[in-house]
Image 1 (cartoon, rainbow, N blue to C red):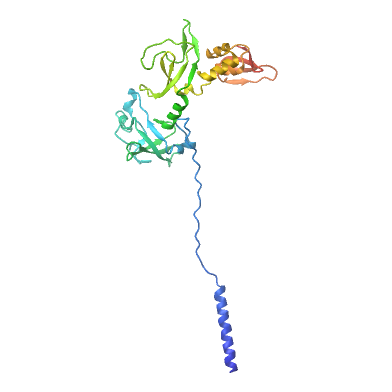
Image 2 (cartoon, rainbow, N blue to C red; image 1 turned 120 degrees about the horizontal axis):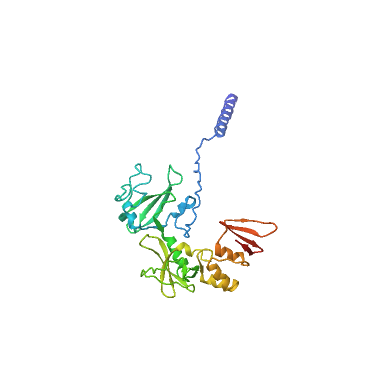
Amino acid sequence: MITSSIMRRTFICILGMMCFVCLCEAQITTSHVAPKQTIEPIVPPFDSTRNFLFNDNVKSYIGQSLYVNGKSKLLRDSGYKNFRTEKEPSNKSDKWGEPAKSNPNNTKFEDLYGKCFVVRDVQPDSKQRDKWWFQLQNKDVPEEVVWFEYDGLYFPFITVSYFNYLKNTLVGKKYVLKYNVNENGVCETWVENKDFNTGESFVQKKEDRWECTEITIEDEFFSLVALIKNQRGNVAAVETGSLIPADGSHQCFEESIFNTLVNKYGAGNIDNVRQGKIRVGMPKALLLMSWGEPDKINRSSHGPDQWVYGYQYVYVQNGKITAWN
């Protein structure tokens, strides 16, 4: 009886130890590892003040509409280059569309001119760091998709948002042009004195005020131009950049700025600026408007600074011209 009791207690003790060992043994498990989070670089919004961009923010073209601009008659036979059927084709001559007349590796002019594409994707070239591939979708024919190889130089498009920026910024503004009087006493400006609409010559006057009426593409060389009209109805085409910035430091003044300058410096001083003239006593602000930024400035600690314009020197002290030669 005693032996049976001892055996029972011994069994219970051994069983307890076995359970304890089982409970203490480590449980092997598998845990899920979260994928590494990759932070995509922030793509800046498209800069609509420029028609084409470079590598730093070229991906901001995604979503933009690109209009294929025309070419002058002499260049049409060469067509358009860099349009491909696939991204980085194994055969670089694998162009998109029909071959151009004078260059079979390019796309025929008629296959692309005037079309508008939406940029659906922008991908870097796997072999050349300064090249990108644009995936373009025809706005009017969505099933028409083409790749364009962009090298930062050749860009046969006008970005629609840039066109709209020019239109919203320039149309409706009035300008006063710089001018000179030739040896015959005739007023001349940098605007061609041939009417854009009629082709007839007209006489310009220094009192003319020009209003930007339209942004368009002229159909001879297919340049993007601003049409400006004076109070007599004469129309001229000028480069859009000649009106930006329109503060007198380039080729013209915006009229409101012109009036402010006349009130501040006097009509005589501003008329000198319009003719590219300078004089002793003229403020350096007007020197900049008349001649622009100097090539360099030689600073002086005890006299006037020397502003260098090519082979001409202007001396400025206390904010005014003291001499020039």
